[in-house]
Image (cartoon, rainbow, N blue to C red; front, side, top):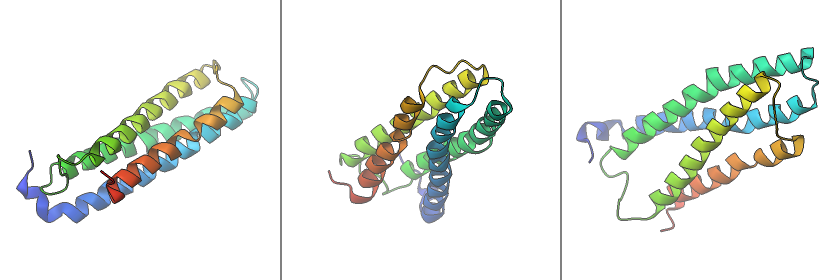
Length: 150
């Protein structure tokens, strides 16, 4: 199903989608890095409390709105005539990357609540590894959306 009314707005919708994705990705790259540093701070210390504020603000003020913005304008793109060839396979790969990124976002949000309670269970090394997840999802999404290999 597509809506012809979106066709004249295609480039604006696409620009809005990309702006939201850039903001979301910035947060997905930065929040796990904050967690790496937070792991080093003693629970209850001034440094730990500062990280809690930074993490909450990043997630609530930037990442959550950017994720909703990205999804919203992505759906509008899908509803724009001619944007998706449903017979092609590339959009399955893009959707897989998007779902992985969304799952990772929610995992980071759950971890933030644990850090807020001083109950983090992951190691600094684990957070360093997790910091690579958004890069992998981004590569998949960009390749699928731009190159459309299948």
